[in-house]
Length: 347
Ligand code: AMP
Ligand code: MG
Image (tube, rainbow, N blue to C red; front, side):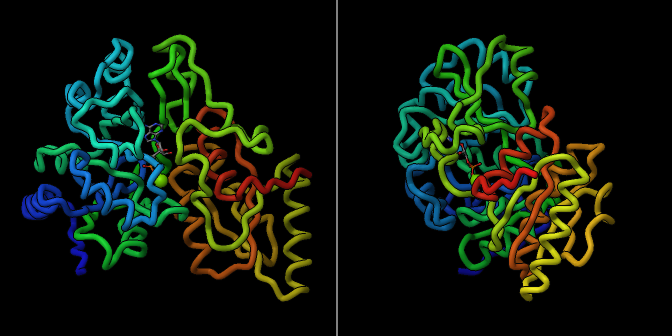
């Protein structure tokens, strides 16, 4: 199959993309979080194509993207007041709400679940495409299952050239990590996946909110089943083995430098993930700078790009510094921990 790659800057590109979606095809497009791989959410066959293109396990449900808040009441069987309040506060934006699905949403889109995930993205290309196609767009992150999500059209081309109908190139995304997923089917709302809309921000609007215990790093050896099926899979991973090194900053640097030297002696190439502030500290490794410690947003934005770049640099192993777990840091560390398969070295 030929994959058309079009800049998202002309009426023609949007018309063509909308037509493909209406005919049951797949179009990758930018959202503010990461690129999405879109298909008609109400068409089971289109959903099947998404799973096939990504190699995604069929029990891992898709998020349905809408361009108008009111569409929530078409996709959900029942919309509680607090969902409308959240939509008012955070939509368009990186918050996905889980609600009981309406009959119109096929099980092929929800991974067999009775609930549906819905989000209104805050990106002009995504909103225009959804509006122009007149459909609800199921769109998981545009990456082959298990790989880091795509944050630039180049990443999507790398994974999907020849496998989908079209890629709309809207440049690099703003946020860089996926939306916060919030389950509203429980009495107390549950965060199933952390994102840049933090627990604190949600609590300011809703009152008490809890985090699914299964996704916390300290509970990994307890093998609790996460409530978002996707969170149980290995994810976001570069090809080389990744280890997070945590502890006092000086010790972390010393340890990583020692590992670089030991590896060099064995003829192995070591990758290092660090920040602008620390990049001079490492000698002999392939150092990739992810962003600035002063601005957590830059770290989120650079994370997947750096993880992907290591695949091209052909390193044998990668060590990452641990980044602050302040508000958005929690979401960043969640992705990094998953990418590392929870391999964490405390020094
Ligand atoms: P992705 O589309 O790749 O960003 O992944 C979507 C995430 O949302 C995955 O972790 C899914 O398991 C989760 N998700 C989607 N729909 C539901 C749902 N109905 N219930 C729980 N989690 C969901
Ligand atoms: Mg994904």
